[in-house]
Image 1: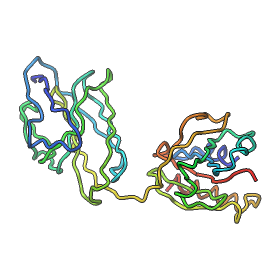
Image 2 (image 1 turned 180 degrees about the horizontal axis):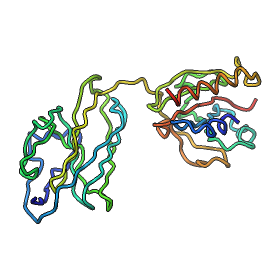
Image 3 (image 1 turned 60 degrees about the vertical axis):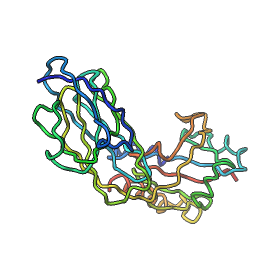
Image 4 (image 1 turned 180 degrees about the vertical axis):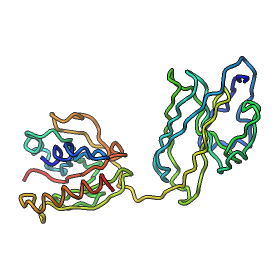
Length: 99
Length: 183
């Protein structure tokens, strides 16, 4: 799992991956968290984070230590089943933690 | 060195020290002045700044001041025994509180979003026993922060299950936010 890989690198800045489930898909929470220990947040009608962050389904949004957005990486258009895409996302995290 | 008791005008970010005395003093004994260390996170308009002061005497009253940077050229209150502050007017009190038993304190203050980026402030910590920190100068930064929110962690095996989670929890870390759902 990418989080474990990043933890093992002992980078100068800690990295945390968090998931945010879309409103209306609450029934999928158990499936999405099965076998995973990453935070999995449920968006709400009040918060509407998917809207305020203007996301596309399966975006990974990297945020730096100051809470500024660094970049977005969509794992539908860049499937992580591809080793190259997986490495690309991993390297984005590594670069963010070492710049 | 004479130790003084502060009667501090308890500070807030908008208090103007020129309009009222920061403190009055009364000699109560002798202790060497502690050498304070002041650290802080980035000063970002619209975001919190965490100030950390160490090196005070246990439970000592400490004031955190800010104003224009003026190394050694600020006011010279009696309790500094001939030394002068390194901030100049108007000097404002960010906090006036007691250090913990280890002589440390942490203070968090919100930087008003209206603060002009590029403005430089000077911060300095002073203590009742005549100690003071070096001047810390900081430029106000204007960053395009991600919109904050607070959502509950639903993962029963996550360390933060049941707790509200916010992007601001990950200041000083890199975070990756995956937006998905089971299909």
